Length: 263
Length: 268
Image (cartoon, rainbow over all chains, first blue to last red; front, side, top):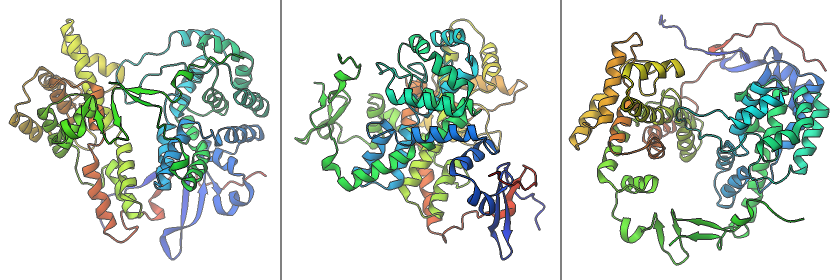
């Protein structure tokens, strides 16, 4: 036997016991203390399990309703969304299905309408909470990136749509529903102060802003919110990619006449 | 209701000087005809021109040397390579393996963040030196603000075996004597005599060499995007050539659960 200690994966999320005949197969799996296949499988909803994985505790009915609503609101951003277009671009070319999801994640990760925007918006919530003056101050004097990062600096107020005109109806409907369903203080405050914040930002609230408020109400950290936002938007990317794969590239925009090379 | 979206003028209207392909079969990159003017370039020269607009066989050769000497270790334990190795053992595709390894290479403790960060640091440090600050002040401020200096220090080991061969290669093609590479080593000298004891790593060396050739942090970042693929691909192929699933398998006891042994029951 070697004296070198066995390297292990340290986790507070997952525990396993081995099958008697195979140490490489789990006989039971416990997620945060709950028996996954003996208990959760029969009694928990998918959304509650998702919450458990991130927060390591069972959600309250309000938390569950809030995450459920958010998951439905984000599940399909629609085929005009950048991340879904990325997935469809994989689909029409006959790329691997995994590449469609990778494409959706890569494009949907960014500062404009993507997961990194949610990350930044969460930082705004952490700093300003429910203080309108603080929001105004931060929006007018946004944090400056002092050393370069692989992420580019934000070009607009996180959580708001720089290309928007007025707050789109689905965003308002989602905000109203989540503020009601989740009973969260921050979503309610956002609902009451949306127009004031939009004036500061000089553009309308976006889905990323609603998602950030919801996830702040759920006590998510910015990096948790970034990850969950990436996950929740994938179903739409998957099905639209599959649909366009079936239809083929001839029925998908190539922008044949829209591309103009400067002389 | 009047339409006044900022996006309206861009509908079916993408104007660019970067380049493109025409139905007539002409391909243009940054104003040059690819077939007539760039067809004899090496791939690295083409990538350099595509990414930065620079035409320099010397920079391309320097970059190629960096990719061979510094970023292509075929070791499946290195985290970005490990992703490709896992893809192979799990019988995914080579492209998916490489794509995932490239994405993972945008890391903090190695890879793209130090590459971009070290270049940025050398430019900022040079500017502040010119404004009259001392090297000590600059490094101390950086450490106080960020608790690290990109390009110095390394996980697992202190020294970096790539520094000497990279410098030898750089000198062999007429690089390695500029002010930024000298600054990179001056910072290393200061740190080695300080209580921090960080040694220079290859990111600062490459950053210094390329800054001396006029590359900005973003240009180096764009050029380095694919730099790790030649290390990842052999890791994928190696695990693919072994029995499926046999790359560092983990038995259940390799999970160190730290959350307490209490079994909970879901409240319905």
